[in-house]
Image (cartoon, rainbow over all chains, first blue to last red; front, side, top):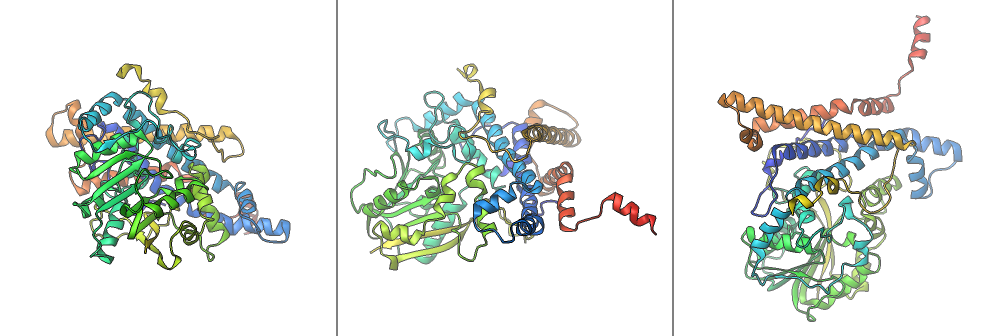
Length: 395
Length: 120
C-alpha cells in the first residue's frame, strides 16, 4: 500500500521576499509530512471497510436495528481499532506539521518581522486598527490546530503564524493547491472570466483574506479594480500585505476589519468574495456577515463563497459522520455545524433573492500539474482541492 | 531579541481545546506520537544523507553550504526521493496495512490452521 501520485518536493513551492528561509532538514521534514498525508488517505479507506464488515454488523446484532443517529454511529466507530489507529496517526500528522512550522518560523522570528516591516513601511495599503477586536468564534479555538491562531503576536510585529500558514498549506495539501497555494482563488477567477466575461468589477472585497493568497488571483484578473482584503488577524494582514508587495501587487489594500461590522458604505462593492472562511465563523455571525455582504453589494454585484462540499440527502450517515472528523479532531468545529445550514436559505434570510442563488463545483487550478495522467486515488475527506461554491447576484 | 524567543518550547505548544485520544489507553497514543516523531527525524536524516551522496558523486567535494542548499536537480531525482518517502512510510506503517488486509479478507488463526493441518 503506497501513494500512487507522489507529491512535489517542497523546494517547488513559490518563494518571495518575505517567505521564511528553510534549511535542508526543514524541507526534508515537510517532504516526509506531505508523503505521510498522502499515505494516510489510503489508510483512511480501511475505515469504511471496518464500518461495513464489523462495526455495523456488531451493532445490528446487539441492538436488532441499525444506527439512528450520527452520534450513535460515532460511538460505535470510536471502539474500532482501525479507526483508532488512523485517527491517532492523522491527528499526530497535523500536530507534527504545526510543530515543524513553528520551530522553523520562530527560530527566525525577528528576521521575518524585519523583512515584513521593510516592505510595509510607509505604504498606505496596509491599514491596521487597534479598535477592531478578534471575534469570539476565533478566540474560542485554534483553527486547524495552529496554536495562537491567526491573531496571536508573541511580541510586537510577530508574523510567525502567518509565515507558518504560508509555508504549511503546501504540506497539508501535498502541493495540490499549486506553488502559491492559491488554487481556490485561481479557480474562482477563471470561473468568472469564463462565465461572465463582460463583468468588470471596479471594487472588490475579500473577507477573511488571511495572507491574501486567494485574493491575488482575483486582483490579477482585474488589475484596474480597487481590491480590499480584510481580516482581524494582524500578523496575517502584515505578512499578507508584504507578500502581495513582494509579488508585485499594488492594487490590493489590506485592512483590519471585522466581517460582521463592515466600515463600508451601502452598495459600494461589485464583488464580495470569501474563500474557506465561512466554516471558520460561528452560528450567529454567519448571518450577520451575510447581511453585511448584502448591504455592501451594489445592484448587479455578485458574492461567491468557496466552501467544503455540503451534505446531501443521498449521502450516507457514515459518509456524513466521517466528513466531520476534521471538525472535531483538526479543530474546525463550526465546519460540522455549518453543514446543517442550507446555503440558499442563509442567503435568502439575509436579503438575497432565492432565484439568483447558484451553486457550482470547483477544482483547484494547480500550476504544478504537468498534465501527466494521474492514478485514481482515494478521496481524503476535507483535504481534496474540490469545493462547493455558492453565491448570488444582487439584482 | 532572537535569543529571548524560546522557539523550541513555542514550537511544541498545545492548541486550544482538550486533545482527543483515540486509543483505549492514552499510553499507546503517547508512544505512537513519540515513535512517529522519531520516524520523521530518521526520514530527515536519510534525505540529508542522500543529498550528501549526490553532491559527493557530482562534485567530489563537500561543503556544509552545499548540503544545506541542495534541492532535487531533475524530475528523476525528485521522483526517486519522493518514492523513498512513500516506501519508507509504507514500511513503518506495515501493521496498519496488514490489519486492513485481515479486515478485508478475514484469515484463520494459526491455532485453527494447526488444527486444520492436523487433519490433512
